[in-house]
Image 1 (cartoon, one colour):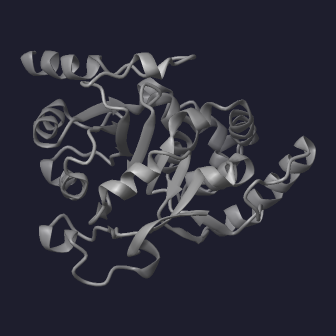
Image 2: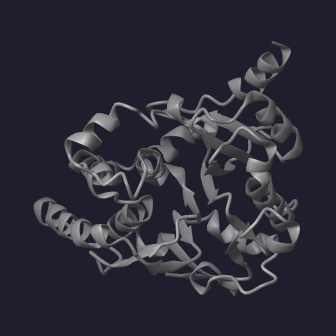
Length: 310
């Protein structure tokens, strides 16, 4: 009982969902304007969180005292209270937030999946829910903050200078890597849908080309949250959501986010990376693997020396 009460007290201050957030009035020295976030896989045992704790140690080592930040770990109700409390005490400014309370992981979508024949033998319903939350809901759930940095639990940030971080916090969107879309059904269905949407809305991308087979690596990015509240961006995301493509074709958050940015972001407000940073997917939870000592997959690691306009 005491554990549940204490955990509730630590998360009660995080009630970010609001229709018209007034962010400037909400920030104090005790409420940073930057939040880092991810969606954890969850699990019943402490060992299930090895990647997450390693990723957060990387993050803390990289950022240091350059800027204060909160850290939000979304979950689907599968993180036991005891583990939440233990990690809350171990990881800098960590809060656990149930994604279901933010509109995510709605099991009613399962009926839609069955009705439209989505191939769940390849991708689970939970995976579709993740794609939906990370493309449609994350910015609403974090509406109390000004900037968000997504750092997934399988990503280690090795080096991040204060100057590079401040540059990212002065634009609408900053990404660390661009790669090819590998999901064949997305390639076959998303591009034609985007082309049709642009034709109907009489839009041209501000950052061409679009459609494109290249996507931003959304396991790591920095973005100004208010940008996603813009009417044009919301109209695009609402249309994509209404199309059913996330659950019918497994459109991921990466192509959806890439299309939104390419369609509506100002070129001057987007940065790509040429900065001193290494990101790598963590192969194991061990500290030896955490530091990218063996060459990681080329598509998931980059070493740069500063931000540049895209």
